[in-house]
Image 1 (cartoon, rainbow, N blue to C red):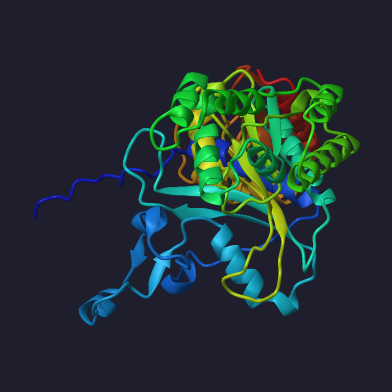
Image 2 (cartoon, rainbow, N blue to C red):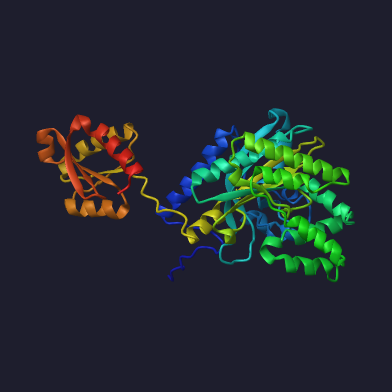
Amino acid sequence: MALTQARTMPGTLELLPPDQIAFQRMLDIVRRNFERFGFLPIETPVMEFSDVLLTKQGGETERQVYFVQSTGALEKSTEGLPELALRFDLTVPLARYVAEHEHDLNFPFRRYQIQRVYRGERAQRGRFREFYQCDIDVIGKDTLSIRYDAEIPAVIYAVFRDLAIGPFTIWLNNRKLMRGFFESVGIGDPERQAHALREVDKLDKRGADYVRDTLTGEGFGLSAGAAKKILDFVQIRSHGHADALAKLDALGADNAAYVEGVAELKQTLELIRAFGVPETHYAINLSIARGLDYYTGTVYETTLNEHPQIGSICSGGRYDNLASNYTKSKLPGVGISIGATRLFWQLREAKLLGAAGNTVQVLVAQMDEALLPACLSLATQLRHAGIATEVVMESGKLGKQFKYADRAGIRFVVVLGPDEIAKGTIAVKDMRKQDQFEVHGADLVKTLRVELEQAQVMPA
């Protein structure tokens, strides 16, 4: 029988153990910081009913959805969409979740979710069909204070500070401010605003000349003066807290949306500082648009200062009504999403991730079959002390066992042979330093804890 070629579907990220450990540590840091801020975990099924998931038929979303059918259902299928589909983000499942459990939740509902999502992306380098998203949202009932808009950047700062991947900036804008500005230059129609915002959102990627040519070209037809006002506006960036407030004060305002947007952004900036986020890590950027139909107030993007080519590593914002397709209740909210799989891939490509060690801390060597029970007992003792321990289950040459530990990245090997048993000692070999010493059996756990702590602080 011919062998089937072993291959991975394009658009998925399958890692070897060292990289998987590094990726898992990234998720652990994200999760730990979400929980520090009082967000509660939820998980939703990977599959949703198609009519729930695709509340708006057609468009780009439907072309990227993976539908799900069992072989039995396939045999009985008739025309129409399959009953089930894989989730393409975590926001639509959250909307369904909140609507379904509305009467059992405490509001404001603070949720975090770290799960895989699926999109039928065109196979290309750095684009994924299966990927992890790490989301937080605060959902209110009827109303939600603007103060929560300032808490989100505090969470972003904590996460990326602990990830230690270099200096970063949390960029902020406000949708109301942008809407008011476009009204002030004569673009009041929502569709034309949406068109203009989509072009403005390309400023950092395509440049000012491209945006100007599009706005003044066929299909949009703005005057050169109006296009200049828009470009001058969207190129506003701040450098420091006082500069951000001064630039907002200098904008001027001649309509209600403009005034409200400026006031909300100023209040958010003041509270971000009160949350303890250093002013070197947040700034206003009036080109950020992000999905006009969804976001309605504050919007965020986070970028690495020294690696702008990576683009946004975390984004989100304020929305008026999360679950309008599923409930008559008004559920405003604010949140952000980190595309963890793509971020990990980008950081690895940019060589910003250090090598991850083996999660196993100690290997118990076996020199003699007769000593296996003693070795297993020793390993149990170490595990009870919180030390991750692997046991060599088949005896063999000690040199070969040392070589195994070295290749696997296990820092310490403990040896319990006949000589050690006779003396009541245990031999410990540090594979990094190539140093070996003996300790009394009763002191092994204490000694290894000290060595492991020193190895963590000062790796060899």
